[in-house]
Each structure stands twice: as structure tokens, then as C-alpha cells.
Image 1 (cartoon, helix red, strand yellow):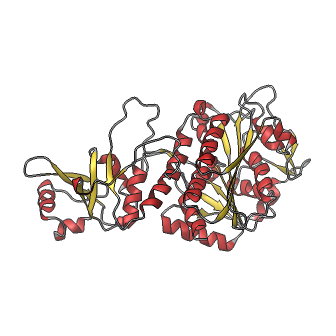
Image 2 (cartoon, helix red, strand yellow):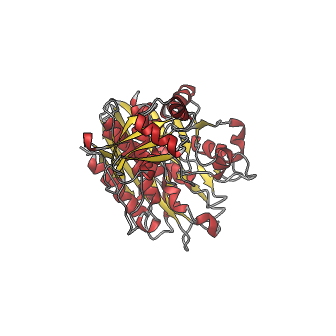
Image 3 (cartoon, one colour):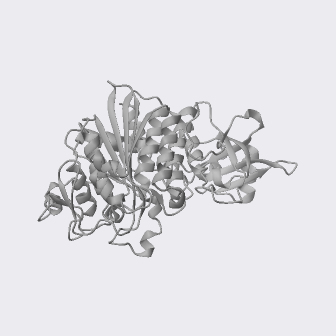
Length: 461
């Protein structure tokens, strides 16, 4: 069975064997020492080709036809392990194979696949693309599985809210569940109050598209309990503490946590990992209307803690609070939450390096190792309990928006920690979910972050 696709697209890979054109992936040293195909070397020298990182030189045949390509890796290929992503966007359409490359087969194939991504759902000028043969010593099935998870996250984030509101996100979630024959349930609208998800209802009640809680179960009871929770704010106006127009431009990506959790769940289910998987996504649109929640309001959470609303634009932690409390009730072995939660995390680490928080030292080390092994960047930030006093409120148990504005990513993580007490291990990921500029393995736009590293960690148990 092929992996789930939210948007169907052709594979970036081919299986045509001898009919493919060769690519010689080279460093400057290969050119200097002449350790490549003689015809390609002769053409490179005549063209003054230096094999700079990401550079492409097409090679003609004696008859003047396209005969192959030289692709530059730069002097230190290890600095950009997925540089072959540029090939997918720079090669002419056609079928290609790697003839030589000082990279592992898995790295060069995954890099090419990641870079092949195009979000052209709304474009009329769709273009043909190059395809690459996966080398025989690569794990083709796992490469395609990881690409499917990454592409799902990217597709969901890139889709504008008029086509990716709470109802449409539920439909995508249902499609994923049905594809892998997982159990799925939905709690929607006022039923959230009946089922004790008051904060999810509070944040989403002002929207014409009702708030909801999505849940998926897959796997076998008795296996390791892995629970994933993702923030699903389909659009965030900021509520009554309304954002300026410039800050709303990218708010379709505020469901990036949900998108990434779904991408990770796809990888887990497609690989048939021996886990008892549970996925929980609170889904809302933070809108403004007569019944919108207000600054100064106080609400009781599912866990029983009361929360004072000091800023309606700090809504993500509210819906996660109920979802995490619900997830925690089953005492999972591993509880992961992902959210596009704070600007403070971006200020600290930028858009490409998502922080994670955990008080489990072994888990922290394992995640760091997985990050390095998969070249999926992560950085641990501290759950510094000295700042816990900042989330306390005067007339409620806690506030959703501490005063002062300092250490915002940490205080947000500490807020969430209040709702996790039974899980054996828990980690919170404060992701951006967006690539502001084109990179070798991404054309820019919606992005999957941390899920390849997490998949690697969960896969090895």
C-alpha cells in the first residue's frame, strides 16, 4: 500500500534503468584530481566549472544532445547533507540517475525527494519535473514514507484557511485515519463542554466553523504507548487582542503543530511500528464575534486548574492544556506535543532550529542523537522552574500570558507542564512550521520540523 497523500502528485523517482541520464555529483577536489568520467571532466574544464555547492553543469553528447550533468557539492558536502534537493529543481525534466556521489544513497535520495516538493494546487502553469532513480543500496520504501509525512505537513500548512478551516482539517485527519484503518472520533461544538474540554470550546466558539477535538487510535494494546498532540489553530486573528495586519499574513500556519503531528503519525503507521498510537488534535479558529472570550476572563480547564486570560492571542496553550490533560489520563509511555506556539522561540533560535523542552534527561539525549543522525535540527531549551512563578495569577491558578515578555518560550512550556503528570516521558516542541526562504531541501513555505528525528527515535524504540 502506498503512503497516504493529501494532495496526489507524481513520484519524484523513476525505475527506468538504462534509459536514465547520469549525474556526476562532485567536489572541487574531483575536478582538480580528475577522478571523474573523462568526458565529463573535459567538459567541466572547458566550461571553467568549479563544483561549487549546488551548481549544475549540463553535459552534451558528441551529437549535441543532452548527455548528463555535473552537480557541485562544494568543498565540504557534509555541511549540506541534503544539497541534492537543488537537483530536483534545477535539472531539466526527464529521468536521471546518480553515477557518482560521495554521499550515502539514503541521503542523496531523500535530499532529492525533499527538494522536489512543489505546492502548485492553485497554479495553472504546472510544469514537468525531473525524476531520480533510487540507488539499489538505499531504503526506497522508507525514503518514500518519510517524504509522504513531510509532504503531508507541508501541504496542510500551505493550504489557505478558506480551504483548511476546522472542517477541512478534520476531513484530512479522517482521510489519514481511513487510509491506515485507524479508529477515529470527533467531539464538536457544544459537545466539547459535555465531554469536559472547556478551553478548546472557549477559544473556538466565536468562529462560524465549530471547534472540535480529533482523536485517532492505531496499533496494538500492550505495545509502547505513544501519544501525539498537535495544536490545530487553523487561523489566529489574535481574538479581541487582535494582531496587526502584518502579523496575520502567515496565520494559516498556526495549525502547523497539527500538520506535523499528522505527518509523524503517517510515518509511524506506514512503517507498522510496534506502538499503541494515539493522536489528539484540538482544532479551532481564533475569531472575533460577540461571544469571543475576553481578556480578564477566567475559565476552568479539563484538569481542574483555573486559567486567567491575560491575552486572547495566547490561545494555543489553552487548547493544548485540555488536550494534554486528556492525553495524560492514559499514562502514555511517550507524550509528544507540537505547536507553533511562541515568537520567543523564533527570536532565540530562528526559523530553522525548533526548540524542545523536557525534564526527562534520557529522552533529551535520545532526541538530540536522533536529530544529529537524521540531520533534522533540534535544540533543547530548559524547563527552568525558577520562572514557574511567572505563570501564577492573582485570582486564578495560572495565567495564559505572563507579564514582562521575557523567557516566553520557557514560560509557555511551563504552562503546558502543569497539565502533564502521569506520562512517563513528555516533550514539548515549539516549532515554526515555515521556511521563510528557499533552501536546498525545500522551496520555502510550509515546513515539517522535528518529525523525521522523532520518527527515527520512535522507530528504534
